[in-house]
Amino acid sequence: MVFPSPALTFPQKAAVIIDGGYWRKVQESLQIATLDFRAFTDALCDPAYRVRTFFFDGKTQANQSFHDNLRLLDRFEVILGDVVPKTIHCPNCDKNFNLETQKRVDVALAVELVHLATAKHVDIIVLVAGDRDFLPAVVAAKHEGVIVRLIHGPNNTVSEQLYQIVDERIEITRKYLESMKVQFGGASIDLQRSKIREPSEKNNLSQISSNEVYQMLARILDKNTKKTGQSKMTGPDLGQMLRNEASDWAKKYHVKRLRDLVALVNDRVKWEESGGKDYISLIGSADRIEPELAGSPIRRFLLDALKTAMEYNPNQTTLSGPYYGQVLRKMDKNWKKTYGVKSLTEALNVIKEKVSCSGSGPSLRITLKS
Image 1 (cartoon, rainbow, N blue to C red):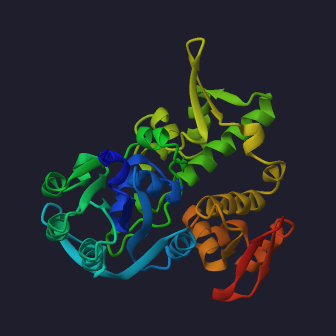
Image 2: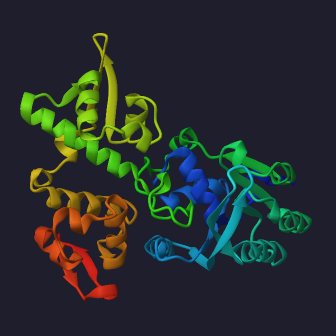
């Protein structure tokens, strides 16, 4: 009798469980803003077939659109818990900080993990998490004969006990995603990140998007192109113009060198060396910046925000007004004052040939025209 190879028969079915809060830490560490989640989770299950993906997260207005789009993916479920403020005291600086924490999310995740294992629905559970609180659930799943594969970010983001107790481990890196042919986008505006801030603080690094850096550099490079006809600038020339526009840029963006600043947007701005000199240019500037982006400042601002929003919703042609407004505020907290408009509806008239609108207020919907 010939027995089939175990590699061909086991494991056959897999489920993916993702801790949304932990996943954002991984995104931040890798400077990844967008990801093809369906292809990503399919790859994580290889060689098994992905039966379903469960995404556990806290419910906030900022990530509502992200959750809605996840639900539209094949065999994806989004389970939401509450996000509540928690005050913590730092003994080193003697200050209080407000920390937004998830409530009941970890418990729901652990329950689902154990349920999948005991119900014998899958042969392998792919766990994207790093918290030691999941140890009992992992042990229970292993006792049921289910393989537990841990997907984690850098070592400092995952519990050592959790790392040791699972059956298999995969560290997510940009190189790994590329090897699995999973499409992802570089660092961009972070609409999902929970923030730690002082109660009275109005501006901190977590609220500053790399999109703001890109806008600033693109503005300078565009000026140079119009003035000299050259699409790239030397490092010293860019540095001089940068100091004229934002003298405190190093302190504001927590970087020491111009090269570090460009690295924040290295998916859209290129640093290259030629003839012993450093040159900076926009990646694919001729194709990336459409002709209409060279119009008025508000027009460019609105279209740039629209492109950013669509990066988070690649399969959709419609956005909610509140979500688009959130993108605009992340790019410029006082954008209405900056561009002299009273409302989002009024601003959208500037790009009315690109979008159509329906509804108003919280029910406003923005649809891209074909």
